[in-house]
Structure formats: C-alpha cells, structure tokens
Image 1 (cartoon, helix red, strand yellow):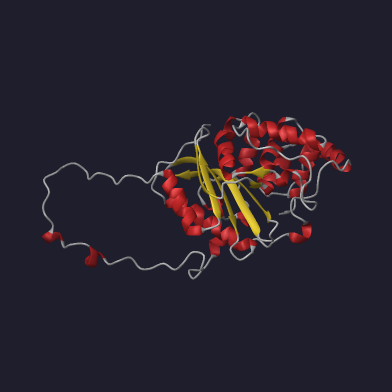
Image 2: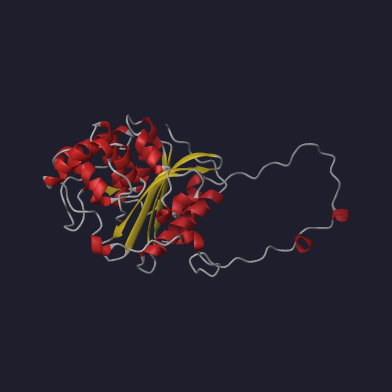
Amino acid sequence: MTFPIRRAWGPAAALIACALSLGACAGAEDAADNSPTFVNTEARGTADPLYGETTAATSAASSTAPAAERAPSDSTEPPAAAPADDVQAVLDRIVAQHGNVGIAVSDGTSTVEAGRTAPEAAWSTSKVPVLIAAHRTGVADSQLVSSAITYSDNEAAKAAWAALGEPTVAAHAAQSVVAEAGDTATQVRSQVTRPEFTAVGQTMWSVGNQAKFMAGLRCVDGAQPTIDAMGVADPAQNYGLRTQPGALMKGGWGPNPAGSYDVRQMGIVRLGGHDVAVALIASSPDGQYASAQAVLTSVAEDLAQADTQWPSPAC
C-alpha cells in the first residue's frame, strides 16, 4: 500500500524526477482508492477466533506421580532428547491448521514447501530486486531505498523502476538480481497485465522460489542497503514475520481476481537459534486484509515454536 515518503531522496532526485516525467512505468501496484486500513495484530484479544482460546495447563498434581512413588535411578546420563520433527512434516502440519496458506524454507540448494506452492502475484515483494538493481546502477540512494522497502512506498518504487530505463530494460535489471540470488525460474514482468497495477508487482513468484531468493540474497552484489532497510520495522506492518525478533523481511499485499486480499512476506528470521530463509502467503478467510495479516502472524508463531532442524541460508 502507499505510505508517505518520510525523507528527501537525496542525490538521485533529479534523475528520478526526469524518469517519472517520461511515464515509463506502470501505475502503483495497489490503486490509491483501494488502500486497506492497517491493523496491528499484536493487539489482538484472547477471544480472537483466528487464534482460538487458550486453556489452562493440566495440573502437575494430576499428571505427575508423587516424588516418593518414583523409582530411583542410578544413571548419570542425561535423558535422550526427543527427535526433532521433519521440516516437511512441520510445514504440512501448519498448512493443515491454517488452510489457504503457502510456506517455504530454503538453504539456497534445497527447498521445502507446503500448501500454496504455485507462482502467484508478487505484489510489493517485487520491490526488493528492483531497488537492489536501482541502487547498484546508481539511480537510488539510501533514502529512496528506505522509502520503497521499509515503508513500501509505491511512488518511491515507481521512481526506481522508471529510473532503470524503459520497462524491458528495468525488468532485465531486476531479473539479473533475482537470478544472482539463485532463483533462475522466476521471470520479472515488464508489461502490464492488470491495468490498475504495475507490471513488476504482478510478477508471478512462488513461495519456494522466494525462499530460495532470500537464502542467496546476502551474496548479491549491492544488496546490503536493501537488506538493511528490510531490517527496519514499520509499525504499520507489524505482523507475520515482522513479529519475530531481528527479522529481515519484505511484505506485499493486494486484491486477487476473486476480490479477496492476498498477503505475502519473504524474509530471513531466527528459528531454532539460527537464520532461516522463509516465504509465506495467505488469503483472508473473510475477504478482509486485516484477517490475512492475522493469519500470517499465527503462521509465523507456529514456525517459531516448531521443534525441527531448519535449513540455514547459503549466504
């Protein structure tokens, strides 16, 4: 959605303004009159039906034998740890709990995915390769990167796209970033397919390929300013992967052709004590954007609580 650009764009402003005047890029990926209200899902109530109600833990007295009745043990070895769940089993279980969602994790070589795994509209997650391409070709300074990535400002992203050149040139530049990170399957779109949205925002990107892209992102030349911006929290987007400490992530959202809201995120988060490249997508169960936010938050919490050996990113 559209946020105000909070700071001046610095040295790239003149070039960007020139590029915009040529009208080389498509419209904002979300129409201005279609902007939903952001909801901070951290403030949800305990009766929220999307999360269910909690029940009190079973009393220790009713579930554990009294100490005096326990058989003594002469062993000095610690008890064997329970085996961790298989990653695929973890993802399958989370998908089964939440329904219409997709999840993927990757180390850059192997990818595990579940649920909605077909390519779908990237929405604002496509701003990541665009801003990396714009930065490393010298047409986007740190202020523009921050506006487009941290705050998902559509006008800033449009400016970066236009400054890269005409649409096929801009798409090729972004495509090079995607491939350099390890995703050679996804094709960045240069032509508008839905008149009210940008071409690049309608790039079809699967959760599996997004997770693979994130696993290799730190190896991409010129990516660090964008990665840094992904690590800065915008209070209006405090849901899903952003609820996990230290998350580096970018979200995207928009109405699907059926009229419901799709919300997706890709990022690197701490799971099981180390970094994991993750991508998520969900549709709102009631057609409302805020409901999809809540689903992603619940999925992220389930990932954080899972007991498994998560794959580590390649970079």
